[in-house]
Image (cartoon, rainbow, N blue to C red; front, side, top):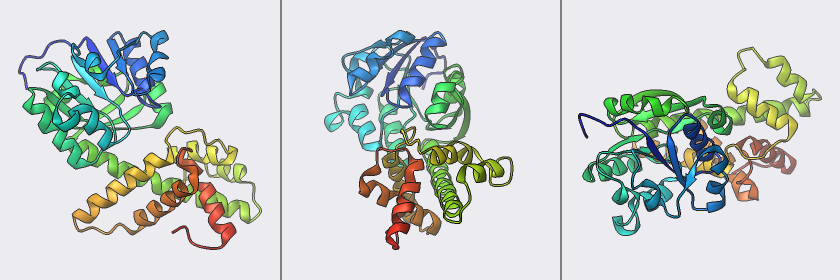
Length: 305
């Protein structure tokens, strides 16, 4: 929006859950004045030890911020908080003209474009810049960041991205959200493939832990195999990425595909498997717990659908 942009000093973080909390802490430790707001206040208050201030309302958090980083759980939640009821009284209305709205949540492409347009009407720059890397990436500052929007805004925010991970400008508004959907299809299908492989190994009499160890470094190896394969072997399903959010993203991706006349049969089956997992009450477990759904399915001798 503005040709001459001020140095970024103040950042508001809206949403301090599994991902937003560590990200806010890293930004404060990088020297920014960070104010946070979360719908569950206790999650934000825990960040005070890392130098993050808290605000009573989202609007209070953003009034004087140079950058507003949104890390909420879904597209509808982002719309409700950013636009407010009836498009009034939300975060966008409280932001000062010339500041930047940085939406790092995983949201539908259409939502990302609509938020960019709403921000522009307010005189704000906007990027949709979702991330991949999970809780570990948020803690370690190694997130893969997919930025959609004007290239010069991505450049302006380079110092903000630096403590969080590696940013790539992927295209105009909505492109970041679209890239994240592609990422989620790859992640979801790979998690299911790892779960099937370890289930097969165990049923055949091999030690799943040793099978995983044997495959490290080969063509089957990947970040998903390393991290989520280990979770499956150790039965550690504390959520880094809850299954209910995984199925949200796969369903959104498939809806976008259908709108564009595409059939994605592997992703359709993966989506059904995760949906069955959520329907059986495991939506709050890590998405690697899809191996539990495979085991249930095989114990019953039926399909996951």
